Image 1 (spheres, rainbow, N blue to C red):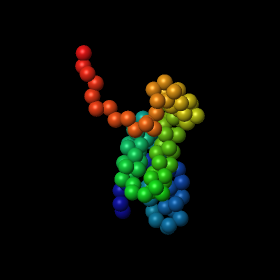
Image 2 (tube, rainbow, N blue to C red):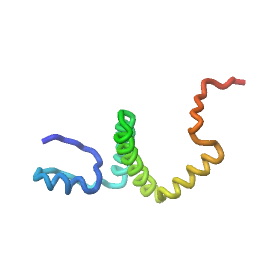
Image 3 (cartoon, rainbow, N blue to C red):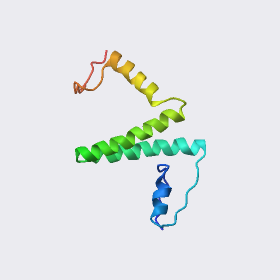
Length: 108
């Protein structure tokens, strides 16, 4: 039986059960949950980095966004609040649309 040891979406056990396969799960405590959410964020971002098509990229970005929703909720916030902070930072410091690549800054 393959061992996965990773956080999965809430309905994955139903999906596995529908195939008739046996599986084992557990509910994480808060400390384990945030640790696994952080690991999952890297996993999903890596999957996005490795995409080669627009369709795959959008699929993986949706997974990244789902993790962001869960992280915001864990921290007692919402994706709407995160979006407001993003907008504020963008207004003050800009976004990434101009594709500016900083090479160096003179040290005084």
